[in-house]
Image 1 (spheres, rainbow, N blue to C red):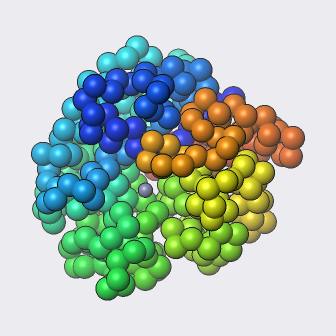
Image 2: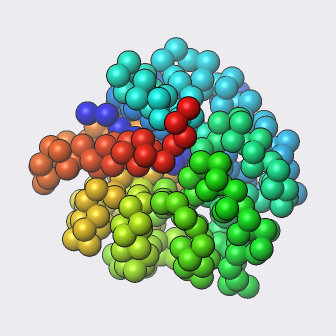
Length: 312
Ligand SMILES: [Zn+2]
């Protein structure tokens, strides 16, 4: 069974330490050989510039793009997913797809012309904020608790026109609801869980989940223990409750995974790296029919991107 994972931060680790290569199992959760072994159809690679870096700018983003090419795409079998046909090609030819995403638009410094350039570089998904506020909108931990700026709204319009999918994970609730009122394309929450089961500010409230289902978006459940059961000690059995919750709201075709591997400092006991997706799949098969598990593991994401990526 194939796998699609909507969020990981392995580029950040390779950016912050140039000696780490893409098969360094000691330092990385997502590695070349684990992706191959687990039969991953597509991994999203986030460009996330750490909040430790003062005044991030476009140069930082370009460095990440360089690392993506130099350390990931250079490997046999990896292909850059930029459009529908890349995705179909990866599926039929058994390739490992790699999608480039941006987490937080801070480094664009409000320059909207960069969006077109990012599109040309193959960025196909943008999370508008990280936890704090930026020039476009506010994240979940921003004390001012505001919403989209005029430029932020313009960013949404341009991304919708270009064919860059927008990601609402990390947005505060006010920005989320504002966003739903003016965006005109289906959107995703690439790595967030269910607030009713784990009351962390990064998780989605019931009405947010219902909204994502309604607009035919997708939710990528995340493997960070604090978003699963608010502790450092979580198991797949705890994650199953989140899956069941979304299914009960009618979201069995709107659910997938966005591990956040390499962006998290603690892991679930039985989901420590990309290779453990095999354990997750085997556990899910005990509870759900094969076609539904296939949906969770990759098909729901596949259908979404097949519909929302550019034609070519
Ligand atoms: Zn994140």
